[in-house]
Length: 451
Figure (cartoon, rainbow, N blue to C red):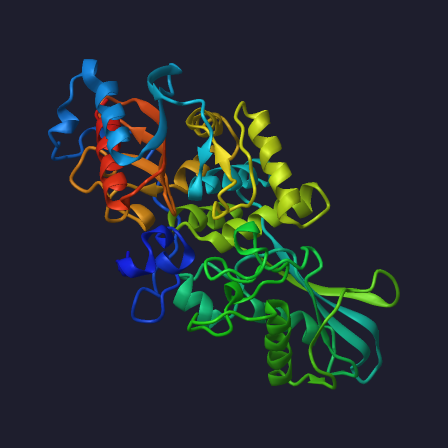
C-alpha cells in the first residue's frame, strides 16, 4: 500500500482523520492511495505466532494491567475514560469513568458504519438511474428530457477520478450512456436534468453551519467525484449533481446523441410519459464501510448517514439518519448522541461503555465480519499505518481513531497473544498534545494485545 505522508503540523493535527489527510491529497502526495478491503484478521494461529518487540510497559503483570492502563489514560488527557472487556466471557478487564459520555470525534463513524451494515446489509448497493420524460418517435427523437436520478451513491465518479483517487473502488457514471443509446434515442429536444432529491439540499453538517466543509465536501443525493470539480481533487463544486449531469451529457454527445438544452437541476416528474432506461450500482456497502473507517473519510460517513435517513425515515437528512443510528445503538444494548455521521460535530457523544457495547454487539450481527474488517490494522494501513509498529498490537489490533481539537480516541478489537478477543474503547477529551495522547493509546493497545 502506498505510504501517505502526514499533513504539516501547522495544518492542525486535529485534521489527521479527515479526508484530506489520507485519501485525497493532491497528485504526488498520496492521491493514488489504494482504498481496498483490509485483510481479515480474526483469531488464528498466524496471530499467536507473530514476532513482536514488547516495550517495558507491555511486560506489565496481570495484577498491574489496569493500573498501567489508567496511568496511560491520565498521561494522555485531562479528561478520559476507558473500558476493556474480554469478549468471550464478558468479563470487564479494566474500566475508568466508563459510563461518562465524551466527545467521540471520528469514533462516531463506528456507529454510522455499524448501523449501515446492520440495517442495509454488507452487500447493499446504491443505485443511480437514467430516465426519459417524453416520447421517442420513429426517428429516435426524444421530445422531452432526460433525468439523471441520484440514489445516494457516494462513489459515483468518472473513471479517471476513480482510478486516481479511489483505487478503482467506484461507480462509473459513463455506464449510463449505454441504456440511453440502447433505447434508440438519437436526439433530445429538451435537456438533461440532475435529480438529487433523495437527500435534502444541505451541503454540510452542524460543525460547518450545514454549509460545505473543507473536511467533507458538498453533500448531495447525486454526488460526483466526492464533490470535487476535477480529478485533481483540489477544489469543490458548488453543484455536484449538475456537474454529474454535465459529464453524462458530454458523454452522450460523444456517443452521437444530440441534446438541445443545457443541464439543469430538477426532480423527475411523478407522472406522465416517463420511463426508466437503466441504472448503475455502487460498490457493495462492505467496501464503502471499509474505506470510511480505514481512511476515516468524512464524506462517505456523512453520505451514509443521509442514506440511512432516506432508507428508513423517508427523509434523506442528517437528522433523520442520526435517529436511525441512535435507534440501532439502543437495539444493540448501546447508546449514542448522534449529530452527524463523521464525528466532526462536537455534540456527537457516547461513553466508553456504549462504544464497547456496540463493538461487542456487532460481533453477533449479520455485518460482523465486514464491520471488523472495516477497521484499520495497527501498524499496517490507513490511519494506523504508522502506529504501534513493533509492538504486540501490530497486526493484532483493529481500531478506529478519532481526532478533533482537544479530542483523541481509539476503540476496537485486539486478538491477543493468548487467543482472546478483547474489545476496548479509549476516549480522551481535554487533550493538549496529540502526540502524547496517541503514544499513550499505543502503549495501552500493546498492553491489551498481550493480555
